[in-house]
Length: 318
Image (cartoon, rainbow, N blue to C red; front, top):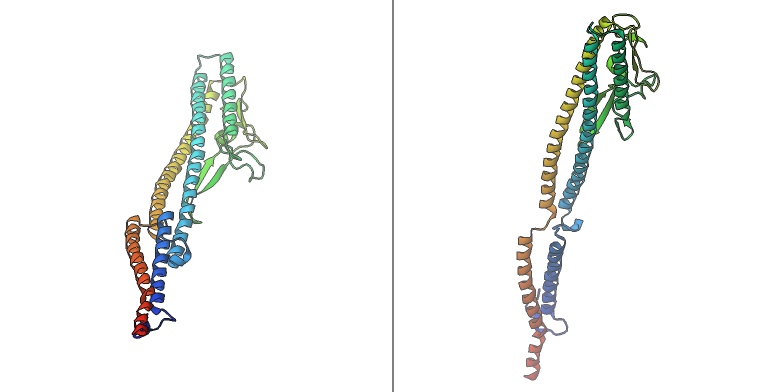
């Protein structure tokens, strides 16, 4: 800043230097303001607001994780939707089995008619196994259990799938999908060839062998009493399927709640990041008008300062 008597010296124009400094500062502020308006961001570099930049970066990272978690929830719901659909088809087969077994339990039928029904029931069992084999998502056979972790490598037990439904390590939901092939549905805890009828060897279930899902066998000697006993096993399988569908429904509901929560979290974190990072255009425009006025006054002041040394000529002329 010019001091008293500085205007009487011409080798160094202090007033002009002060005006140039002021103009340069205004021009710098104008450039920064224009960048904010052109990029839409209040913070374009860490030096603009180092603390804000750091906070916004963490928020951006969290939003990225939340967005992927939202995608994961959608994929998880797809898996459970596929499972539910196949469960429904298996249930339809079991209901048809129940009707056929009830028909065969009636003494109005002869052995030949029961034989036909037995063939139908065996075919329905094969269909259940095919449904289990063909219900696949990525590399998972969803309805055959985790047959890669048990000693016999059999298609039984259950498959546990852990879904990452949040951006933190602990944000997971585990879904247990029980095997629903013939071996799993009609396994009475016995060895291969376990009886499902009242007479030994009349109606049997072949438990899962390596790579298999079990099978139902109806001997030609099976009578009405055997089929009445078999009805009990079909009812047990239907009850088990109802429980499976209920469990899937509970997990689907949990995923829907998580989806809503994630959506709200994404919106809240995006809003927080926006308040830190994004330009307030109304404020930026007002600042732009202020800086333009300052630029004009600084330019005028610089021109006036450059003409200042001319006054010294009056001393010489005198």
